[in-house]
Length: 105
Image: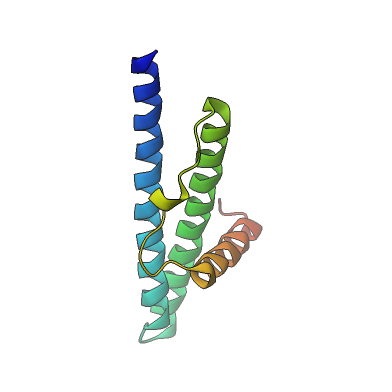
């Protein structure tokens, strides 16, 4: 029983680390996109931003489903990172939807 609970918590922690890492990558692509010197570089950064935002959205969905299946509590404090606020999340969600609408999932 303890071993199973430990393994589930370790899987949950792994998912949380991946979400935090993806958020950092999303923020990096957003900054690259905003500071791009020309349109070609900006377009490529925007494409990667949308792709990574879509990945983040899928990771969050998998995390919620995993917690629901296993009965574990979602630990939102474990997936927060500095400078990630509602505005960042909203922009990332919009970018993910745009990516998914393009059909490039």
